[in-house]
Structure formats: structure tokens, C-alpha cells
Image (cartoon, rainbow, N blue to C red; front, side):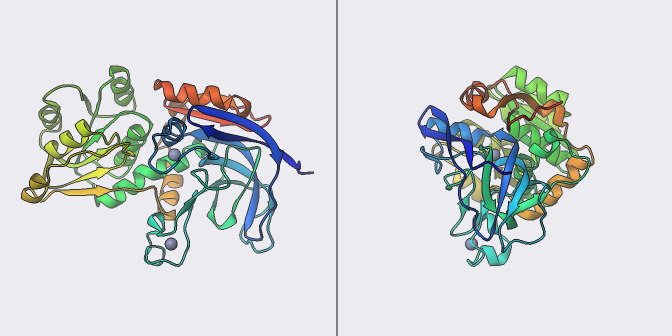
Length: 348
Ligand SMILES: [Zn+2]
Ligand SMILES: [Zn+2]
């Protein structure tokens, strides 16, 4: 018997995270009703809560890094059965525009985003979602591994856009959650040497523990020179997971002539870019926005093969009722990934 009410998280106003009880919405013919197992708190949720995210403004219903169980299926769905463990690919593309019909549904001209301003998000006991966006979680995945499929797909897309990085030198700016997953992605895709930067020593230590070849203090005035020293050359590819003025300036400074700087982090304000250097050194400045289904498939395969240390990445869990505390913990900056758990769910 499926409950007719649910608890659901709402970011009601900047800094105000509430859990409200309300009726479960009616299931549309193309939707699945999913019960929550775990939901990750994302950096963008924290930006959104503070009112500093470029597109996610309160009030909104968060939760786009979600794992759950199919409880019911609309009449027009196919390929799923009740009881399956699933994770939504939260982008909701229109399927008709030029981007959708050329394999770039992540930059759909009419994109809606589950958990990011859409009427539904995954931080709820039960939620509805377009069934065709659900990926089935394979046997052998525990909840931690499953919770990383969505966040790991973002750096995998960034690598896809950078091109073939096998044997290349890579710099990753930022040792936060996305930076560390970027490290796993670059490693899995065959980067030869990976140097990472951060302002915090504790974060740099974390990156070394997870397999960075070297780390550099990004507060150093000669950060680009130091990265070059650790790589033994200028970086073939730089992944900027911070996207603020100092990191973008140093990224363009440390990248090889003809190289690529990929903007992975969500910038919260405009930055200045020395376009003369881009032109003169033929540097490609590449934006990267979320992922496509192939990145999800890639994420699932690499996580299944042990390419991501899920136990190390998930640093705390809170029951859904304590979402405000979980957001505060994630905002404090010393966590890698904070998870919320659904009703009665405990991680071993
Ligand atoms: Zn996210
Ligand atoms: Zn579209």
C-alpha cells in the first residue's frame, strides 16, 4: 500500500530549508512513482539555498542526485518494473529541439531539470519523475556507489568534451567533491599525470589520498608555474572545478598552447578572460554542462569496476527530516559528499 502523503524538502527562501508533509502528486502516464533510498546534497543545492545559483532560485524543491525504488508506473511507460532500484538522469530535455536531435540533450533549448527548479525533486519520501529518465542500477551496487552515479557523470562529460586524454597531462583546479570525482574520471580515461590545486591543505591531502600525483597550493602567487613544475610541462588539459577569477586566470596561464580549459564548476559571478592569450596560443575554453546518457552508462561501468572510492567519498548521512542540518554540514565545506536517507533507510 503506497502512502497518500509524503514528506518533502522545500528551500522556501534563501537560507530556509523546510520539510513539509503533503499529498503525493498524481502519477502522469509517462511517469514513475519512486520511493527515496538516498539523495546526495550537491554544491549547487548549497548555492541555491544561499540564493547565489544562476538558475536555481528559492522557492524550489531540491534533489537531483537520487536513488530510489520504483513503486508504481504510469500507463505509457516501458522497460521498468515495480521494485527496481533506479536513479534518474535529472535533465528533462524536450526531445524535439536542435540540441536534442543532435545528441546534446544536456543543452536542450527547452531544458527542465528535476530537482533544480522543476515542480518535482528527489528529496521526498515519494516523488514522480519521467520514467524514460530512469537508469536501472545494476546488481552489486550498494547505496553509496549508486549515489555517486549522477555526480560522477558530470566530470565524465567534461572529459568527453576535452577529447582523448590518454597519455595526457591534466591539471584539476579544486579538490572538493567534483574535483575528486574529476580525478577519478581523468584516471579512468587514461591521463598520464594529474596535478590538483586547492587553497586548503586538508583538501589537498584528500586529493593525494585518492591518487593525485601531486598537489599545489592555489593561493601561491606562482601557482601556474608550480603546476607546470609538478607536471613536467604545461597541462594538456585543465579542468576548472571552481570557476572563479583566480582559478580561470591560472588555468589559462598553465595550459599548453593549443590546449583545452574546461569549465566544470558553476560560476557564481562573471570573470575576466584574457582573450588575446586564447587567440594567440590557440587555447580552447570549453564549457561543460551536466551530462548525457552515455556519461551515465560510463559512470555505472567505472563505479562497478571499482574506479571510485565510494566509502571515502561519502562522509556523512542524515535522515530526510534533518535536511536543514545536512545542508548546513555540506555548506561548512569539510565534507566530501553528504547523503540524505529515506524513511527507515540506514547505510551499513
Ligand atoms: Zn549535483
Ligand atoms: Zn530539446
